[in-house]
Length: 90
Image 1 (cartoon, rainbow, N blue to C red):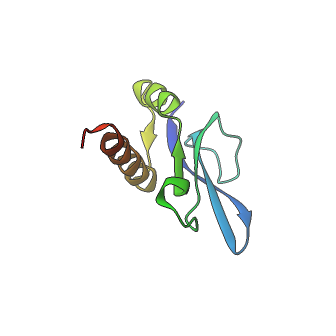
Image 2 (cartoon, rainbow, N blue to C red):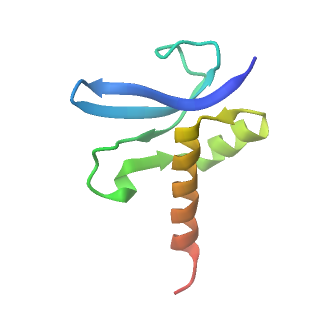
């Protein structure tokens, strides 16, 4: 069972919204996800509202061998960078 972390599109035609899901690689684009890890709203005005990832679930899936798609990898990097900036002293 190869698990990947990828985006699953939801929302209306002109209002895209994506779930970040852990799903079997052989599943289609509308397949049943094993777990929803977060969401991505590309049309949100604030960066904080664009991406939301539950890092504990993400870390558990990566630890178990799940591979992230290119897009999800870039979103993870943005979230990790924002977390570091929020924690860093000024």
